[in-house]
Length: 136
Image 1 (cartoon, helix red, strand yellow):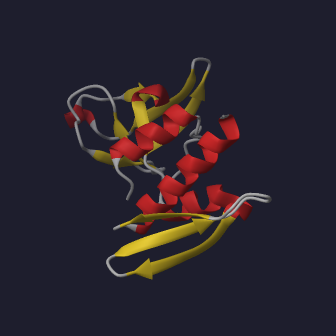
Image 2: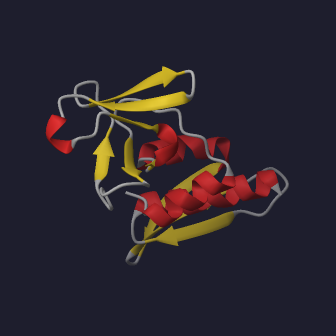
């Protein structure tokens, strides 16, 4: 799973979340510091409202949390989601010693590598660089 710091950097760089069942997130406000939630049709559902996406917590009266704006949630993309977001730029994921290395390449540009102890972190770092390149 990617770190909250990397997820924050991805959102700040422009990565947009369209909540779907199975997505993981943390709340950026309130007393749930560090608690990871998963969208599920049975527990936490995403609904579209006039003000934007709303995350509804079903059957959680003991939490005293009925719903929250998706703006107050930080998406923690899964490894498969990050790989998909890399699209055609993704070349390989390899294990080198104690780290995973993601190699990406864009047409007309040299290949880049991003390594981390966790493959999702390596994918996330590669995606962050691609987003920054695209928006610079």
